[in-house]
Length: 308
Ligand code: SF4
Image: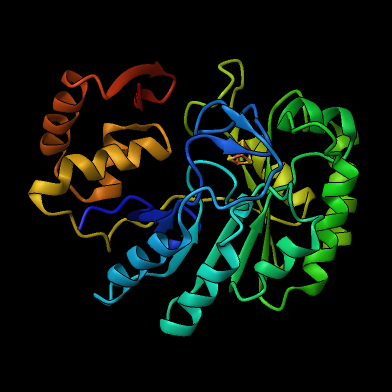
């Protein structure tokens, strides 16, 4: 079966082996973060609706999980903000009722957490990873470039309310953008926010792949360690890739394309994510490039492939 709404399983830097569920079309989000590895937001919206058919997502999830794959998480993530989809609660409930052995994670930019309906929809997940990059309105606007009407104050209040109500684990993610949210003032506000949220973990991240804004640079490892320690958190580490099985030969091109569609990758990243041999990855990338589906871009860490 060719999956439209699932991707992976991929080795995740935080979640071990993770099957991704993508609930919104590329690129639908309530933010347009300068660092977003999915590229610029083309549909900037806070409107919740059924962006893709809930029943088809459930059918794909059911078909995949019925094969009893070895997974650490089933993760809602992908081409934008998953909580914009009004069926997310129903899909989480389906997984937990039918396949309770699988842990469910939701990665969210937090923009919709002020909405009590969204918070209620996430209650049966095992882990929610909300992002918070800024507390002051100016820095929030410059980093997250939210849809009109959203304020940093509302988003922070939504995360605090969610963390109090949610019975599962909350891992707060803070993405450091040098020159914007690594000033002493902003870090001090972020530390107060961490105290108010009291998450189970704080994870500090920085640019690893090309972001939406080409001027954004990664924070240095030393600075990242300093900030993580100031915020009582940890730096997000490398993915564990040893448990990934390669896809069937006839599906390899589609798997590579699905991976690049969610985020730009180097050929080495793709080899690690898919467990394909580097020569096979190179062959498929050449074919995808010849079909006009992907293009290479030179970045500091090497040549990244992204969808055209
Ligand atoms: S990083 Fe997340 S929240 Fe920000 S624009 Fe990309 S998908 Fe949306």
